[in-house]
Length: 364
Image (tube, rainbow, N blue to C red):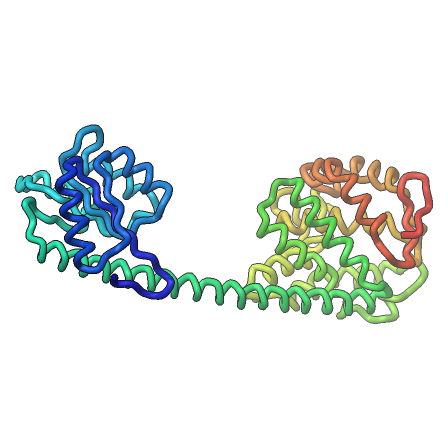
């Protein structure tokens, strides 16, 4: 038998005349082929083709119940049989019939009564084509696996770099890095409840931690000041959005492009009263609107040098009160739907940050 590594060549013969399938099977077995299945009932053949992958089919044109053309048309609609050679066995010499068969996907024709040597040669040639096709598909599959493996490795490295950079930024701002982690998680949760697709949610999760990257350009004396800021100092602090945008501008990856949008717009407000570019409503990118909510929620729920933590219910009431003002109403709706998941983010934290959930003081 003509065989090759990694492939199992199975030949199917379909003809309502028993004498024909016996003759074809005998000729092929005499030529070294062992894996042959013959069918006199085209319906039974079709059922078997659905359940098992064949590599070459020899099909009679005229059969009761299902014609060879109908059977071939059905098989060509299946991905598994798109490239399987199908040879039509026929005594019909009409040009119209042959053209119909070709249009439906016939690979070749063998005229009845057929020459045994011609049958052998055609089967050999077509199985060689099938063999080459399978080898190409196997190489493509192997290459795809290698590409996916390399892509996954790049994604892991990209994620690690993002988290290390964002934690460095947070340390400079006097935190431990948990703020950026919580903002990232909350942003992803809100996006999921908004119905965003998986890729958007993953990109947002990795881009959100860079929302305050522009703070590396703010003087320490202002950034670390424990007391109330002057108007001038507030104006300087506000510059971190444009500084962050300048740092991230011109990125080629979707991740850096989204991080740019977030850095620039996470202090914009739905009613247009925020800062950055003075955007309002849907003019603010969705990622920026989501992070704006997640950032404020975390700031209110956690203890800062200038404030005590709010309870979760206090934060929830504030978020609803600011719907349509500070926050996108759709994001507020998603926050409400996800409130238990967001509350769990704070109960799961392991840090020295005091967080109030409802009326209880929780050391998370």
